[in-house]
Length: 267
Image (spheres, rainbow, N blue to C red):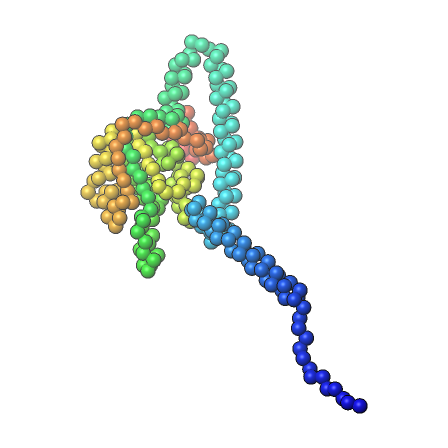
């Protein structure tokens, strides 16, 4: 009886298993590609909106602070509107004095920056430099970015030159308007603003322009990149009214200054 020895041979995998493996690989690659595409799109959106993608915690905290501030401002504005309504009703009962009081109220609202104004003046535009120095230290790179001190310097110089009304972007500046940096954002009246910062001042345009161009003054301070500041006259501009809170928490008016002085001396 003959013996037949069968040589061992590898069993070929079914074609269906190979096809299934390639399909799974294709699906996995498609999912990864979609995720990469979504991540790239999100980063582009963040850059387009000038939001710092690496500081989500800081943005969340800033959002909460702004939300609370806005809620408080709405309440203050509502209270003021209610008080104005009561005053208007009271004035209706005394028509002889109404016109005088209305004129005085308009003058006070104008002086306080609570009304929109129009007139000639100067427009100063501040913008971050387009120059980039990636190999330089951070201290050098920061000189090519607009900071709150730059805006404050322009505003103070315009005030000293006789500006009657000033606005930064859409924020009207009053006596207690804060202008400060918080991370990469500049807040004006506690509202975040981004460059370019357009500072409009109503007043004598020539006097205001001369103040900007003083030797060693504001414009001269941008010698590293003069393109960061632009100064232009305007025959007519419209400045919005101040929209922030106006109620004082600690300061109170003194009705009789002499009696108040005597009480302080006695204390």
